Image (cartoon, rainbow, N blue to C red):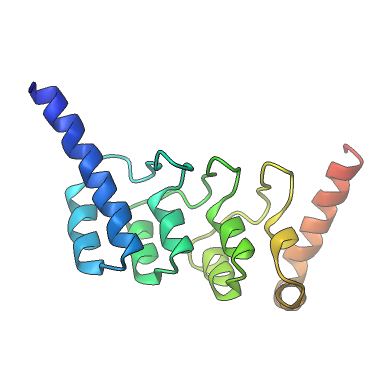
Length: 153
């Protein structure tokens, strides 16, 4: 096996171990693998285009989110379905994570999915009401942008 092939396999295995350590909530292994990995931390899986940050949102792994953010992850990337981590959190009805993604990780609330829906369109009605109360300015800006889309402005 050539050195180039060996390194390619090594990196792919390392990426797989990162995803698995998130899935199985093994922070010690995650920390080890994430520190061994020297490439772009925004790599995606081959199944649905999820990044490690999206995996951590999906599996509700807050300490892993923090470490990925420290490593310079782009929180606004989209998966193969056009969803960001924020949209995924809204779909999963994890309002606490929606708030963290906005406040701690600077998630862009104006990115839409592949159907041109905002994250607020995916929130459960109760959480949407809470968001309206907690973030009235941002919610009103989303409404303005929705109307602009609707009327092609």
